[in-house]
Length: 465
Ligand SMILES: Cc1cc2nc3c(=O)[nH]c(=O)nc-3n(C[C@H](O)[C@H](O)[C@H](O)COP(=O)(O)OP(=O)(O)OC[C@H]3O[C@@H](n4cnc5c(N)ncnc54)[C@H](O)[C@@H]3O)c2cc1C
Ligand code: FES
Ligand code: FES
View (cartoon, rainbow, N blue to C red):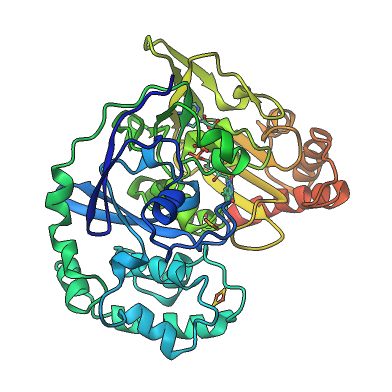
């Protein structure tokens, strides 16, 4: 029997209470049940951005808005939130974002335009720096088939200039006065505070962000009893205590990318993470989802393997089991997770002071593409230049995200010099046997692995962290 629970949220200016299945898809609810046709259904795989909506979460009396791909968002993940479609942004006059797109001919057939407007409005609302590059990054998950991106870039240029005037303190006032948002946004924090959240919905299948499940099995997933982990407080948060990072299972890729803790220890994190999926997907795709889907090219798996991370697993009886991430991947898409177990958190010890870290990803397209090969490294050397600790990982090279154990054993206790690195590279290559597929031939992937291995040492040679 299906477990029915009412879900309440605000859609634009309307409070919604629905008994629809919590695992059903937001995009369908918006278009079919609410007849709001401005949000478009394009790829239904998170790729095109035509279905982009804003999702606002009440935090300490303020609402924090982020974009999401509504085609991969279950209703269970928006309980107690404010969902804004293009209709919820529109008013009698065009907004400054719409005016800029219109003025610079940034729209033609118009199919992608609501998605671009929502993403750029989210950028205007965000606390991200108001540079052209940051604005462009906000639409990295929006594809236009007909206008050509130059005219959209000119519109972004104009929006960026205007946003220089935005004041930090009275952000919402400024956005409403300048007609980026309609006035009903003022009342949203109070309205959200009155919504009663359902108790966590008990279900056999865990859904994090849903960005993997709804692509792999959309019909099956939309019709299951699920437990929704994305917003559960016990799975959120990033902390650093006594030299150990702890990251909740449901922390998203963007929460890692913009966290103070990661930016302080990994100053290049934004540069690396912007290569992972798109703004919309990073806003909802979780750490645990990336690890449990066990994709051989999972970027977060590869990143944390090189930090020699551990997973904290738990079950309903609160038994805790700790397992090294490198032992978690058993075989292609198979992980060491018992019936009823789930990931609670990931932990890693900060390597010794002066440790070096690097992440490299090569894909056919720079943005919004999965890797042909990705790899990461962390290492520390003694004052005499001897390797004390080293961890190297790679994706796209084996059936699982790979931890290079033999290469580590060889390099520990050695000096980093040309001869030792050359020997280490031979061992590295012998540890994998990549297959040829659409992301590259076996030979190409092997060559990439070699080149990226040396790139790690080149990139880290002058690193100061
Ligand atoms: C357009 C697009 C681009 C993408 N690009 C990339 C990319 O560049 N790099 C990349 O690595 N990935 C990419 N992905 C894949 C995906 O977005 C990520 O892997 C994401 O991190 C998955 O997380 P999720 O929370 O959405 O997973 P979900 O779909 O919610 O879940 C995936 C699996 O994890 C399980 N699960 C979730 N949480 C837990 C938990 N706490 N304990 C136990 N099991 C759990 C679920 O049951 C499910 O089996 C992309 C996806 C899309 C749609
Ligand atoms: S329909 Fe293409 S991203 Fe959702
Ligand atoms: S204007 Fe036609 S797809 Fe962008």
